[in-house]
Length: 114
Length: 111
Image 1 (spheres, each protein chain N blue to C red):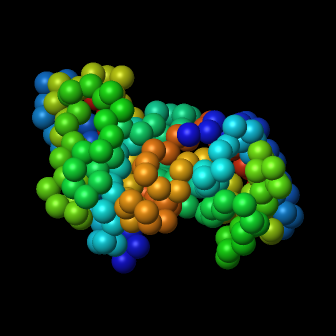
Image 2: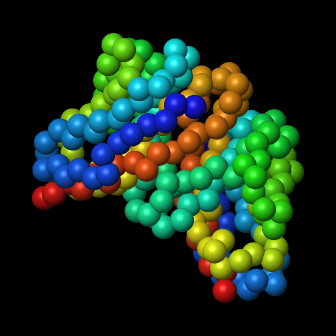
């Protein structure tokens, strides 16, 4: 299984809502990533988890809260988002420290904040 | 991580080779060059990577200049399905998980 899955595919939420994005991989990868991508722009790194510990936080606002419950799962909890947070949210995984660096990306969750 | 520079867009006739250049003049000795592509509204897809030597796989070939300051991704026989944004990235082989995506090249394969 060389797939990264993300749910939901689409999400519409109000600014007062709380929602979560989910990402799953069963490749035995120990590094997992969240990226944000605005239209016609390249993906921007948000968070990196390495061996289930938060390794990188690219100064992301606290209204985005990542969680890595186990080595296969990555969540992104959303609360009090703003309309400018509307974007494609991509999850990726890679083998981990010292391993090949290629990242496997999921299809993304398209988020719209009203 | 070294910064990359790519042309904004390119066209290629179907069936011809597509040659996508990337400049990474500040690359250091232990940084690899990675190529990804992103077809409209999908997640990026890994294509190939290399350090010094030229590399080839079932999707593409990667030519890295001897001074490592630039590289070219070659799609030998482009098809309409190769229409995508192609990103060139450099990163350390280990010790960091940070990918910095450049603006990429929007390749359009023409029938």
